Amino acid sequence: MPRACGYMNAMKHLRLFLLPLFLAAMLQPAHADALRLPTISAYLNSLKSAEGRFTQINQDGTIATGKIYIKRPGRIRFEYDPPDATLVMAGGGQVAIFDPKSNQPPEQYPLARTPLNLILQRNVDLSRANMVTAFEYDGTATMVVAQDPKNPEYGNIRLKFTGPPVELRQWIITSGDGTRTTVTLNDLKTVNSLQSGLFNIPLETRRRGR
Figure (cartoon, one colour):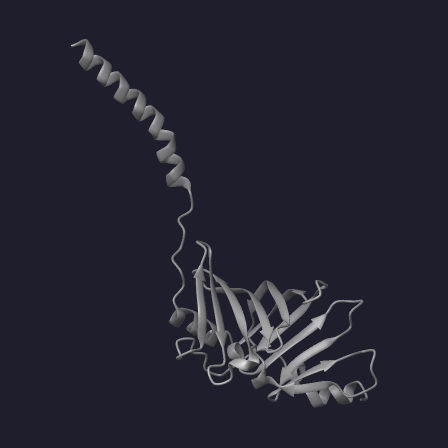
């Protein structure tokens, strides 16, 4: 009988010990599962017009901030905060870099030759063969590394998503020469529409008298 009483007391104390642990576990937020590629593709295709803030870390460690505008397909605009008055925009199939310190026309190159084109295409399909080269999940965010399957020499883009609901948080572009540029998005919000003039390279060139 004493042995039975001892057993019951031990179980009672064990329950009292485990109860706080059980309650703490119940109160912890459950980790979402990794996002699937079709889900991410659908999210990107639904992202028609958006704007927000960004922080950019360059290859040399310098940091810049500014405002970003996205108008899919094929258009994006980076307005950098003072004292950096650089403007980068994509539109009409071209990327243009406006350097306020130069009197020359903006430097331009085809958008299709940049990894950023992969998320600005009219139809994003990350499940295409050889497009995604890496897929990771850390318990909080899903990371996808994508490249142009036909032109891997153009570099790649590492995309970071959270959700559900799905949100694009960051991308890291590694160009063909190995240069890395990290862009972290802050408060990216969808909007009803954005003026097309924000992405009009010839119009911006004329406005600046170049």
